[in-house]
Image (cartoon, rainbow, N blue to C red):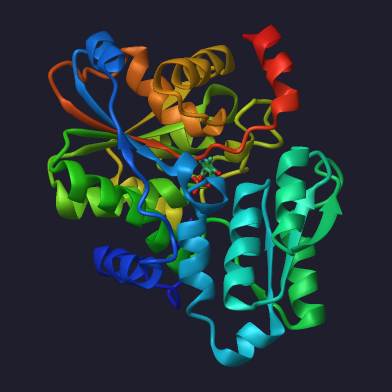
Length: 326
Ligand SMILES: *Cc1c(COP(=O)(O)O)cnc(C)c1O
């Protein structure tokens, strides 16, 4: 896979620029620590609480960064995006703040809580059937027909730079870290986090974490060939993306130290542990990094460890299902 020459890969100066752009609009989320986690791992673990970000996930960072840079004409015409949920909500909220009309293409089986939240922020929803239609094509068609700007969920320089601001804040607050565990779907959060970590804590090993059933990025990382996965079955709905993108794939190869995978039962056990012990409501995808850090497969004993808790949008109706599954 080659990178389009017209688009340059984002750098740390883009992350810093994004941090200025979102300052005072995005929350500077808290960093949590837990004695029981530290005892269990033998490490100093710092959780960056993006479950407490506006619209419930780090995605507001990239969305606001991208929308706030549109020209006056682009703002007036509006934007279109596709997402399993959190990017949709983030675009819907950022558009509401900035007065930009927004259309969100969403799978018909997206959690109800995410559809309702997107509508609540005033986004127009267009539903599609995951098994029969291609969301990129629907997004492109709407962009063409209505003159909307397409804002994809991860493969976009300003989205990646915006997502990197969470790791930037974490390292700014706690100082140098030895490891940083980051959930990975399309790799926007992972790429941005790795750019920030490499610049601010050069020895830091950045580990991307995927659901075991959707391990395309892990395989792409190991083989240096882009792998894809179609509609994987996992409770981590934010990481069901088919593959890394044309920007995030080279960035992951360049900046990420390793990839890890977590199976769904382990992920759910970790999620409930975070709810019970840290009193932090994290969604399954949001617990990927924590699950890998707690799994004991990466040698973190004695180290200073950052973990991005990427989101907290949980549909409470799903909890009984998850309890049975775990
Ligand atoms: C979107 C999302 C991810 C994955 O982010 P990518 O940039 O697609 O890798 C992880 N966690 C949550 C909660 C998300 O919403």
